[in-house]
Image (cartoon, rainbow, N blue to C red; front, top):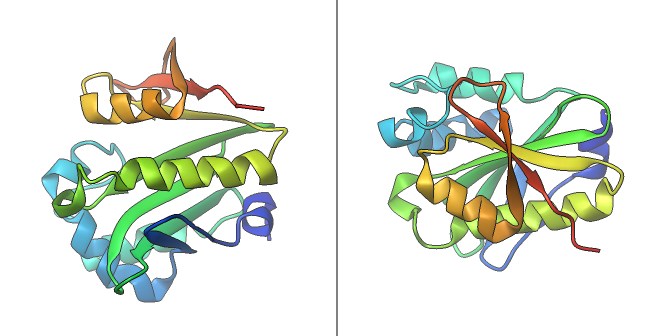
Length: 170
């Protein structure tokens, strides 16, 4: 197993439990991702997002450099969010996330990212954490800033994205 799989087995927050996405989660993943508001915001997702796309995404994310979790409601077996950590070179971890559109605006994105950042702070204290976000995606920019990310002014690897770096808190 890789660094992230070894150090990030799973975690929880107040309302959600985060488990690594597995092949049997493909239908639930497809249901929350097959939405143009999601796929238009995430450059590597296509619309429509089919069950085959979902299965391929899960398979692709099972690597030594990626650890992607589904955020499931504790009270029912409903997938709410996807959040991942991705090694991007020595000592650098990128996070990314999306929330099913029916559950956006209810604090799940903040809850998921805050929980992952807490785990990364403990599990990978020697790694810097960053995110890429389109400046036009105001809700995501606000979420990153609320979490303590700061825009660097640098262009992201993905077209139209800016880099936001996380200022760790001791």
